Length: 220
Ligand SMILES: [Zn+2]
Image 1 (cartoon, rainbow, N blue to C red):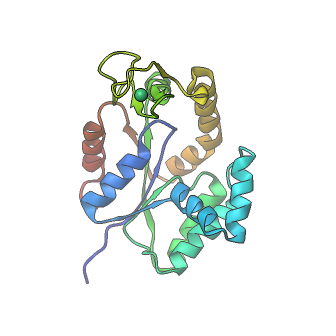
Image 2: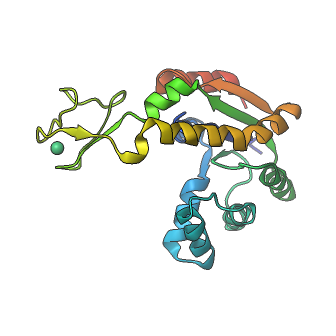
């Protein structure tokens, strides 16, 4: 029997690019990218009872509860989602979720072998998080670092002035980063103590970060 690649958890602060990296990794290695954010949005779109409770929590600015996210993952696995070669992104966020994840995988003959924390300094993350620009006239979007307009502050398409989205301002994003670090600190320690955690430098280009991840994972 062909040995399937192991299961990997990806986590990291907003702006570090973990969604992009999780999807690149799964493409390169034939793994399955499971994004909890996408799965939650899928539930909402289906209009299920679960979806409705998720919608309410998110509208209140809260994270979905342990019970809800675990229910969503269990549903995915019960529908025949693989228990090997998973790249989990945006999950787990709490120790309860982390413990239940392993229990769920084990019950189905799978196991969690690696946890990668993608991280970068707050300055880099803030520059990425606050760099989005929008043309209010034709709705074209830009990014100061990744997709700059030809002329600073001016829309390439229609020549109107570009603006920043309100929730992209520095203080809001800094608050988001700090909240993230505060909330996930216990999870980082939990995985570190168990010898599963590797920290990957998330600064630099998408390709550079991809290469670091590849080298870290070796031949799993
Ligand atoms: Zn425009």
